Image (cartoon, rainbow, N blue to C red; front, side, top):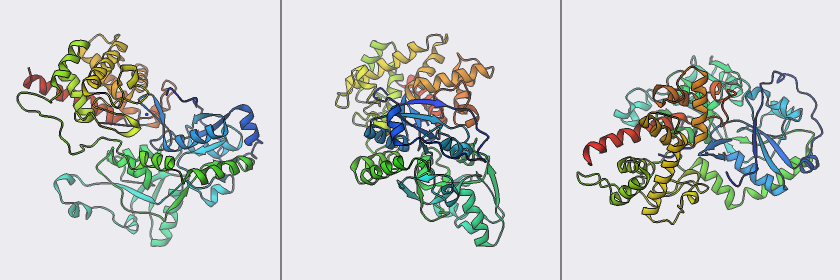
Length: 471
């Protein structure tokens, strides 16, 4: 299973988190920081949301659709890219206008209200808003035509329903207009900017709230993590997404617009768009079965797994369980973020363990065992071997940074930071919530926590099954 989680050795950008800002209702005149000043100081600063489409960490790598676009733009104008993760999205415009950042990058919709205070770049995505709702209980045992009848299939059916959205968003404005269109009341529960849109999406999946709204591109990504969501009901016409710019930065706007106009026609832009919005973040079986899984063997690579086990000290069946989870033993697997091979190495990590995209299966497996061995060694302070293995598996899947964040949260909340089960794994699950991933002890931001949580449990469950079958 591949994730983002919730993704650098070649990057020069740095990350900062900044405190809450309560001045969002008062917008100061824009400071005079334009393109010449940005080039002179050698960096451009973006005010970003920590989300699966804008900016996040995946296996120690900075990623995000908007982040990648602006990293290329920064390289184009010869400056570094600095990211400031904003804790309260209600503060974005006031922070931009007082010079805390040079651009707003957070899946920002162009609206007339926002345009009174800031300018916008040329649009880089046009997408409609869609309703996020939960499929009914037992939907997997029903025909699609059956469970769809239990859902909202038209925006007018939201009359007398409660729906949670960010109050200072275009979603809130759209719902306000929809009330007038349908001639009935929608109970719009506006939340402040301290709660992320993706947190609301997960709350719908978990049954904590019934509905929220987001853009279709965001919905497509998140539906891969929460398969009990239905996101097909459109709530608006296509809306333009763009970067926010100070009105006092006309040269920056001109340069960015010129660059976007050319870059959008290039194959690189198409590839980046496909990577985030069309490639699978959660690995699905590609239809090719590389596993034997009979009474005599796990795969045709068993000899390589056994050899790697002897080298690393890891049970060969546990290494095999990792490979099955990562790629179903596919030596040619290629996935989100550029991870490749049976053991799904990132391009920046594979060479460290002697693994390249064209390496044969035995080298891929040996490299994977070396990485698992290194991850276990990193957690040697964990006294129990089984718990230590779980820390190593979580690190292999999500990167050590997120696991360290969960460990620090566990210690802060009175749990044992050296035990995975019911302790660190509990705090890992909380890293999808702003309340936790914006804690001062957290250094790597949000992640899609259930992916790694399930990854560890599924690998271990498969391993214990295989132990009883393949002695």
